[in-house]
Every structure is written in structure tokens, then in C-alpha cells.
Image (cartoon, protein in one colour):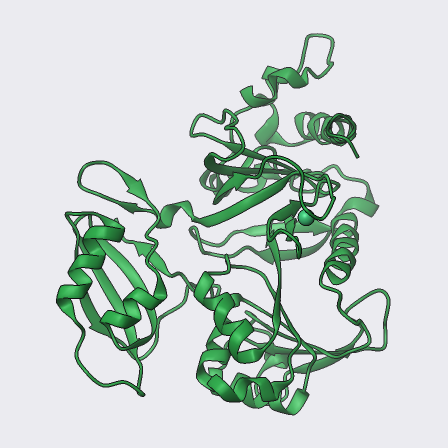
Amino acid sequence: MSRKDLRSYQEALLAMVLCRAREYVKLYQDRLDPVFGRDGKIDFTRWTDIPVLTKEELIACGDDKFDNDLPDAQKPFEWSATSGTTGKPFLAAKTRSSLLMAACINERLIALGELDTRKPLATIRYSKDPELTFPDGKTTRGWSLHAPGALSHTLSQETSTDQQIDWLQHRKPAYLTAYPSVAAEIALVMGADARRLGIEAVLTFGEAVLDDQRMAITEYLGARVVDAYSAQETGYIALQCPVSGDYHTVSGAVHLEIADQDGKLVPAGTEGDILITPFHNAVMPLIRYRIGDRGVMAAGRCGCGRTSPRLRTIGGRSRDMFHYADGSHRFANIAMSDLQAAVPLLQYQLVQHQPTDVELRYVPDPARTGEPDLEALARIARRDLHESVVIRVKPVDAISRTVSGKFARTRRMF
Ligand SMILES: [Zn+2]
């Protein structure tokens, strides 16, 4: 589909979302004024004048975010508490059509990852469902519309890595769906033995895949990474291309923009806030929703031949950028190998308490002895973070996760 065709296709879908939201959802009664003319027609050239919707606004508006006047077929089918990575969890609703859309995109992901849908899949996910507890978890059939008989095993993430490994050894799945941090931890703990699990591909979701996590999964598990970018309140957003590594947006399901702080679009190659407008979640329309991730759009055509717009990188959550004494802020990117050369660690998290004070919480590597090299660490801090920063070290038994079980490599506490 050409860019022009895609735009008119998306505008037709957006028009339906906007009209419905303006009429039936209190939150949008006024905020869509910039694009609506007196005659009720929509002027898409003024799209970026629609104010950006933040997660804080969405939480604060309570039930004013819902369309309560929907026909039965569109009524909420499933309620879920969204992840608490960027703040307190809140309730989001899904409709039959949004769930159907998710199932269709799931098939596309399966095709992209060249998965054999007859093989068993194991999923480790955050859940309080007592049916998913160790040692059995839950087994159902059919994880794809193509093979309704295939085994699908699920285990709660509220289990130790050793329990997860034990469970995987008994279930023997060909594929594993998990947060990248969970899969990487399994790979790291098992080391050279990880290949015995026989996992061919890991389908990652929920967190950005960090380079060292990807490496642990491919090297130790011997599995390829099939990554999807999604969020509970929006559904699928983009799927990773096996050819270029970029993320193709699911342009039949969401409109995606990269914008600056004022909601104006930034050009390809420039980092900005990711704004999402899903087309198929009528019960809780999200229009120019700032999801809390940063991204960079890729320019030109993808090597795979697909023409959908694509993200080159998806950054961590914007709240986890480090802020420094001179007013600058950026992501804390330190190579795992550099840190491991200075500190005998298996896992780590960088926590910024004050602009100049960063704590390195780490799980010591039992296979290595020796004290952290504080001088090397000081050099890394000056080079990779900021010249004013001092890193102090704190060994811990485990890195704690967020309320929804996500792992954050960096956290800012102020
Ligand atoms: Zn591609």
C-alpha cells in the first residue's frame, strides 16, 4: 500500500473513532475541537493540534474515558489492569472486535517468526490466577487460529527462575512467550545447559529487548527472538522485522506518531514520544495517547519490501531517563560487558537517587570472586552517564520488579 493510500485508509478509520468519541465520551467533548469544522467535517491537516493525551490524564478522568452508549456487540468483553511500569495501574477495557484484531495480528506475528503452529508453546506471564501456579501451571489447546489442537502451556511469572526451568524441562515447548528479562534470566542461569530445553524461538513482549538479553537468549538458549511491541491498553503496536530488525507498525490497527513535547511531529531519525491512536477499541478510545515510550522512525524502504511505517528503535520508558545537574537528560546506556568487567555481576539495575548519585544494584556472579573496581566504575560513570555522576555499588539477592512483574534496567527516583 502506498503512503497516500495508507493515509486515506487510516483517515477513514480515524474519522469513525473521532466522531464517536466526540459524541459519546466525556473526555473528548472539547479536545477534538481543532479538527472539527462548523459543518462537522474533519480537517486532518490540523490533526497535530489535538492535544496529546497522557496516562496521568487518563487515570485522573476516571469513568469519563469510557463510551457507555455502545451497541451490545461492542460492549466490553474483557477488563484488564494495565501494567504499572509508568505509574499506578488502571483498568482498561477490550471489546470483541479489539480481541479479534489481536488474534489476527498474532497470526501475522506467527508468520513473521516462521513458527510451526502445531508445535507446543509455553507462556510465562504475570498473573495472580491460582490455576497458573507451579508446578503444573495450566495447559490448554490452540495458540493459533491455524492449529486449534496444539498444546499451549502457561505458568505464572510469580515463580522462581529455577521453578520456571523445572517447568520448561517437563513441558518441552518449541516456543516460549515471556518478557525478555524473564527469558534472558532463564538463559543466564542455565548457561551452556540452556540448549537442552530445545526452545527454538522466544516470543518477547512487554519490555524493550536489551542487547545483552537478546544475546543471552540467542547464545545460551540457541533460540531466535521474535519481538512484538504492544501495550495492554492499546494492543499490538508494531512487530519486529526479521530482515531489518526494525519494527513495522500494525497500520491496520493503530495510527502511530513520533512527537515532541508539544505534540508536533518530529522527522524520521529524530527521537520523540510515541503517540498511539488505536482504531478498534471503541469502549475506551485513545486519541494521540502518549504511551510513555520513546521512539525513532526509520526512513526509506525496508529491506523486506514491506511498506508500512516502521520504528527503528523503541526506547525505554521516558520516566527512566536520567536527569543531570546541568538540566540535560538522556537514557543511561552502559554496555553490560563494560559493567561486568568492573563488577562481578550477573544482573544489575541502575537507580538514580539524585542528579549526581547513581546506585548500581547488582546480583553477584557466584562464579567470579573479587571486589568491584570502583575506579573503572568512576570512568564508566563519567563517560557513559555524566561527568558529575558517582556510581556506588550495592550487592543484592535479586533485582525487584515493578508491580506488574516487569524488569527495569534503569530507574529514576526523583
Ligand atoms: Zn521489514
